[in-house]
Length: 377
Image (cartoon, rainbow, N blue to C red):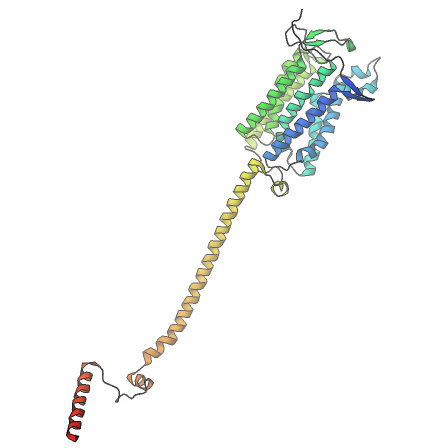
């Protein structure tokens, strides 16, 4: 007897009048909003414009839904095209069945189209949204709980999920909640990517590649626990092989990209600082660098201007001093005692003698004049 387990909902749809509200669809929608919200914050922090992530998501999300459904229908075609099945059910996405491999592949195509239209590098955009995609998967996996699907082997663990539905050959009982395992794993992947991105400043798509590699590692062992029908190759489920191949490709990309393009993109969206008004932490560093460069250029220009002004002043000073010196010094050099006397209104003979001899002559003349006055008196 089970002491504890996770109960499944009795039904996965509620009706608001004639409008059905399906738990699976709600989980997908909430996951998309979480991915866009976190991706937008990370994009702004790297120097991008607010709203760019949402604008590109308008392209990525529809492509991702189509790709996810195509992958599921192709790999599980017997559910829709075998005898007794209705092929119209292949379009009923709300009933479950989205392959993450097709969703990411086609979603990347849609994101590439949107990124080109916005003029932003696709690898930088992928790095920004990678943790958000992992969280979106964590939320979206709870849609499988609403539909009572994609559970694992039978178990009596306290966290086993109870399956009550008998649709499509299900057997009621308690099973490993692989949807919960994958949800928790995706949360761990998101935290890992965020930490690694801050610690190692991942760029040029390496944060996204890390997300892919980490998710594939978890998906491999979780997929191995599932008991739903699937195609097998060499004893392994098809999704196990897919996870293994994609994991190796992601690791290879990280290694080669780190060698070819180390570091992180300096600019992720041209004109973001002027248009968005918020360049983020890295954008602020770029702005400071630009400001320093502008200051250095301005100082260099001022220095050049100062040199030109100094040179001009020096040349003008030399000319001015030479001209005024020639005019001023020449008359002084050509002056003679007679010219000086004429300038003072006296002649050379009537000019008062100077020096000690001149003083004696003046005194002698005064004595003589005094004597003459005395005689007359």
